[in-house]
Length: 343
Image (cartoon, rainbow, N blue to C red; front, side, top):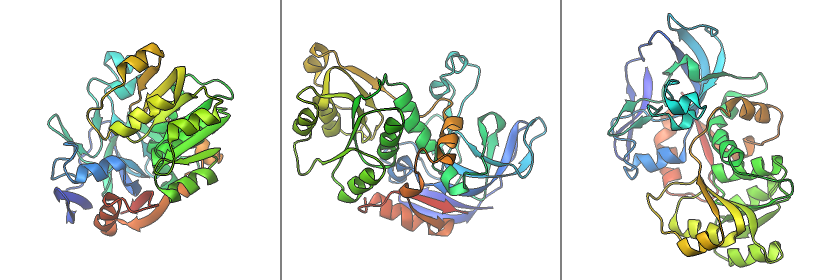
């Protein structure tokens, strides 16, 4: 089969590779759409250490079942499906608690690190364990389904954060995840959703998608603006969707006493923390990783139009053009959002 292979850092090649061999409980999915994730873009240059070449990346995907393993039940050739990016064991203590994103034995599609190698979905076919499959509603296209993994991250972050009706929220970072968080917050009943970024195109998109306020952090003092918008109190909820020291510090400066800061971005391995201010103001700081069973809700939200994912798709392109699109995303081309590749 054909696959987009990261042969060495910053070098892709369309190559002939072996079609995956199925385990008894696997299905073979003919990939119809696969999104380029920010983690893939960071992985291509070796900066994360989690895309060690050679590797077929890609974990935001959807397709059609082409073959089923001998122990597979409830699935058939021709079924339209998407799948979790996390292959969880289902047996460890975290899985038994329903916290499959924290599985002790988790593997992520399209990741190769010191612990494991798991080829992903930038290919004609990918093998998927049946327990992480989800059936696509007729109302959801393959391209839309390739955004479900990203939406599930946003919905998970919002779901683990205590939210009350009419809460005032700030989202720092207007990338794909940040804009999906903003939409999920509006759907959850927040009265104010302010989105912060330095890309004017993304801020315009945030407004079109329902943000009540947009703030350009290159042009204004964001914490001061948030205080003004909240009568000097600060935001009830702040979501960090970048993962950089400056933006984490900004989040802590925007939140009110007793408020909640949820960290989703993780581009930087370490950040400094304003410890005394965080402690004395009783700020609740939580991390949010991946998703834990939110796929059905996300598919329903897309199908009913509660969340607009089409507006976030900048391009749908053939897999053969994948290297060029990776380069454009890596260069942080202004306004460029989600790119979907079709094998």
